[in-house]
Image (cartoon, rainbow, N blue to C red; front, side, top):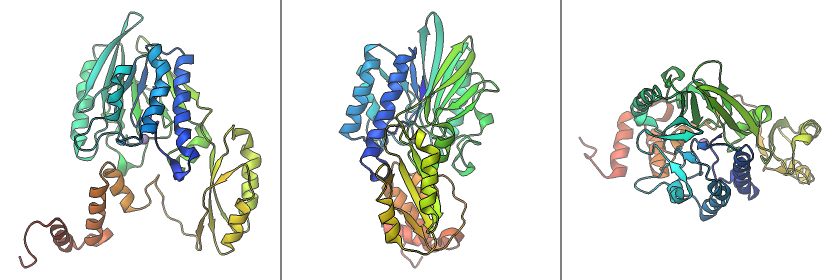
Length: 380
Ligand SMILES: [Mn+2]
């Protein structure tokens, strides 16, 4: 089974129930592994939502893997960008080594060879490498490809953005740069499920098991959330999805003051069969002029739906929105996601350089020197 981006400990929208949802989805994934009688599990990163998960997240993880441990199902894991430790701490997942959680590829490419019913299977993994470590990544891919030459059945685990699956600015490698000799490329990082099985090797983003952002809603409505059940036979790979039933239904309504109520009713009649046992969470964005209080009162009348605080916009503005990346600070925060202090510094530096035009380099550097208390004084 290939599972990814479980983000245990995440609490979307600061709604209490949204923390439990991530635990439920992970537990369901582990149940599927047992039901499907899988030989082993690969998890391609972002197991936890942060590098320093809460005791609750650690406990939920432990409880969910106990049945896996009892059945001695091997569990291989790499780190994502969310759970890679900051500075010199240990990865949280390493606490569970005694339970058979095999964290590999933390600092460089690592591999294991396991025997499945007399067949040798190569499992290679490299944890998330971002930004300036990009050349290392391509080297690791080449190194991995050499290893794969010796095995008929092989899997590479990696947690990166590959061109064609996310907007280009965020991508760390091109599809053509991926190793060619593996049977299956198990990827994490992109939260929407994706599969390329028309050519060799078979490539897949298993996708997240719950929604981390409203940008995942359209992918969820189309494909649902799932894990991959992968069959390998003499290098032949077949991928089947198993949909997760516990995922909380979400929807996003973009409307105006006169139509929002009918849009909500249309959503209910179209999707109520898909709501499942959990109350759906609905985000509402309203453009134009009208009574905001009346909208809030109306939303409060729906007992069976959790509405987030509605978003109001007085003028309709069209901007190109990339997933989770509306502002330059989103790019900066994403790049330094494990180091909020540096992210803040970088954002301020950018602002002091004159922002988008960046024509005020001198001012920016002066500001930086002043802030860090280093270098020359202003006269030089
Ligand atoms: Mn993720």
